[in-house]
Image (cartoon, rainbow, N blue to C red; front, side, top):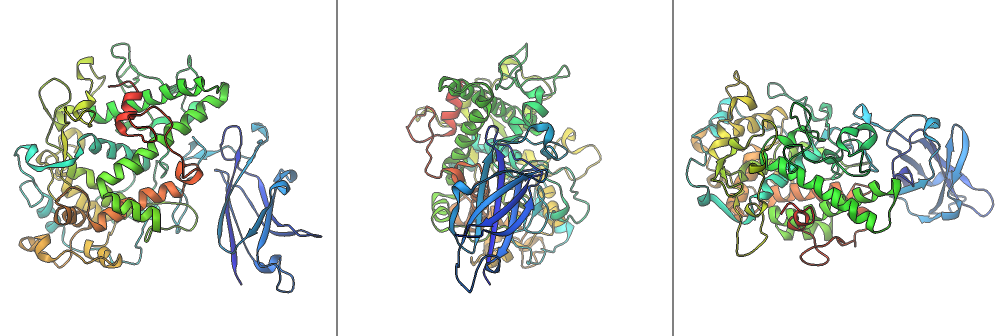
Length: 560
């Protein structure tokens, strides 16, 4: 008999936060007697799932489709119902619902909304893998065998002076012709918005289902907003409700900092280097300008912050989907997924972060990093000379015209190509990053060993599983290192971009993995613009009405 599966979320209509501890009953509406088809309790995020088959409401084989409404109970008392908005003719399939109501007083709820031991930030569920609880990693291809090769092979491949070493030459020789250098750091910003793994190790095999992700795998900017003004008050301006703190007494164009010059932000990794630090600052300023815009539109009081966050998130999501992804994977893959759907990245309830994405495909940015960057009017600096060890002096503030294309008459620096060559500076990481006792100073070696520790499949195995013709041995060029018919997934994805597109975008395997995951995360988020209003277009000022690029964000944030 056909199975009906109802996945939903119950939220406070004022704050859009999930409400936990409510009993949700699903009923089939009939002319005489309504039928109870299932019930459950909303979890800490307000999410719930009810599954039933036709036997719960069919009579004599009639009524093949359910007419659903819900009863919501608080402390065993009927709190409200949805009889006035019945879902008619619900088919036997996965159906998602969003129940908005005036929440019981906070002191009466049966538990606060908690994420990773702290109060949750927003109106959005914590996604999970089909195989394990929310907040963890998972696999797209759990049935594929692990890639096997010796540690010596991986070290030889990723070492300084090895096949992946681009050499100390001029950065311009290996530049992309289409991707400005700023997108290297925007990709890093996206990654920090999605994942934060503090528990895995290079020394042992890691089960992704047991690795904790200390970021919510949603494009929601929790790296910017923390856990909201109640749980992360140090991020917010108490004198200007709804706004985020910005700057120091010495430099208004820096992140807010404590007396030891530690940045007061939602993710400490966004203060690792000057460029990502200043990009995070741009998002803080962007939010504050949006708060002013929201107030000008008539929002007041507690309604200001949620509306400002929605606009900030939706414009950020628009940039990811409509500017970043086409540059990285090509417009054709994006269009195909949006039109024909995803082919490989699926989940049973809510999205999760696949290790094929986080440990391999989305480490594409390591190939894009230049050895040197022109930050402002000063001479170029090597990458690790841009490390942040405290407050940013006013003279070091980033000129974003060096990183993004604002004017055709003033081209920016461009990122390195998406190929299997890594800037030499990344193959000899400084002691403050890896420690004095760690001999594996090459970022390439560390990436390759991490892929091995997570038992990732080989690139050829993944290509075959996706129905894509693998690269040939000659194209991979690994025979001199003791190559054993298969290549590490991370190396394979970079080499594929080099072979198939000349490094201008990722290739078929890498491009499909990155695009399906990022689009899937948007499609799986109850509150993303792609889920709530897929026909939405940006409404903030931009160079071209109806569009919104990173340059428009930086202009609106008044950092250019």
